[in-house]
Image (spheres, rainbow, N blue to C red):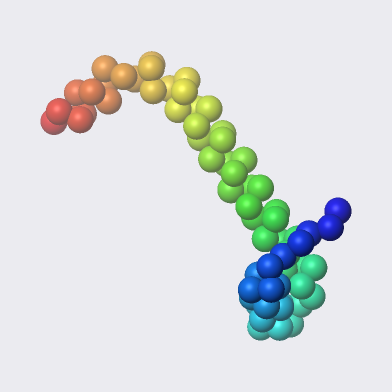
Amino acid sequence: MTLRLTDEEADALRRQAEREDRSMQEVAREAVREYVERRTHTARVDDALDVLAPRYADLLDRLGKA
Protein backbone atom coordinates (compact mmCIF):
# COMPACT_ATOMS: atom_id res chain seq x y z
CA MET A 1 0.00 0.00 0.00
CA THR A 2 1.22 3.46 -0.82
CA LEU A 3 -0.07 6.38 1.19
CA ARG A 4 0.09 9.65 -0.69
CA LEU A 5 0.08 12.76 1.49
CA THR A 6 -0.07 16.40 0.55
CA ASP A 7 3.06 18.40 1.30
CA GLU A 8 1.29 19.93 4.29
CA GLU A 9 0.23 16.52 5.65
CA ALA A 10 3.73 15.11 5.17
CA ASP A 11 5.26 18.11 6.95
CA ALA A 12 2.83 17.77 9.85
CA LEU A 13 3.55 14.04 10.11
CA ARG A 14 7.30 14.67 9.99
CA ARG A 15 7.09 17.31 12.74
CA GLN A 16 4.98 15.03 14.94
CA ALA A 17 7.35 12.11 14.43
CA GLU A 18 10.30 14.32 15.35
CA ARG A 19 8.52 15.56 18.50
CA GLU A 20 7.90 11.97 19.56
CA ASP A 21 11.34 10.74 18.45
CA ARG A 22 9.63 8.10 16.31
CA SER A 23 9.52 7.29 12.64
CA MET A 24 6.86 8.78 10.40
CA GLN A 25 5.70 5.24 9.68
CA GLU A 26 5.18 4.49 13.38
CA VAL A 27 3.18 7.67 13.90
CA ALA A 28 1.06 7.06 10.80
CA ARG A 29 0.36 3.42 11.72
CA GLU A 30 -0.70 4.44 15.22
CA ALA A 31 -2.98 7.12 13.78
CA VAL A 32 -4.62 4.54 11.50
CA ARG A 33 -5.11 2.12 14.41
CA GLU A 34 -6.68 4.83 16.58
CA TYR A 35 -8.95 5.94 13.73
CA VAL A 36 -10.17 2.40 13.10
CA GLU A 37 -10.73 1.79 16.83
CA ARG A 38 -12.79 4.99 17.14
CA ARG A 39 -14.86 4.16 14.07
CA THR A 40 -15.41 0.59 15.26
CA HIS A 41 -16.51 1.83 18.68
CA THR A 42 -18.88 4.37 17.13
CA ALA A 43 -20.39 1.69 14.90
CA ARG A 44 -20.92 -0.61 17.89
CA VAL A 45 -22.60 2.18 19.86
CA ASP A 46 -24.83 2.97 16.88
CA ASP A 47 -25.79 -0.71 16.58
CA ALA A 48 -26.61 -0.87 20.29
CA LEU A 49 -28.74 2.26 20.04
CA ASP A 50 -30.65 0.77 17.11
CA VAL A 51 -31.63 -2.11 19.42
CA LEU A 52 -32.09 -0.21 22.69
CA ALA A 53 -33.74 3.04 21.61
CA PRO A 54 -36.98 1.40 20.44
CA ARG A 55 -37.08 -0.72 23.58
CA TYR A 56 -36.84 2.33 25.83
CA ALA A 57 -38.60 4.86 23.57
CA ASP A 58 -41.41 5.52 26.07
CA LEU A 59 -38.98 6.06 28.94
CA LEU A 60 -36.77 8.33 26.84
CA ASP A 61 -39.83 10.33 25.79
CA ARG A 62 -40.94 10.77 29.40
CA LEU A 63 -37.43 11.78 30.49
CA GLY A 64 -37.31 14.32 27.68
CA LYS A 65 -40.51 15.91 28.94
CA ALA A 66 -39.47 15.96 32.61
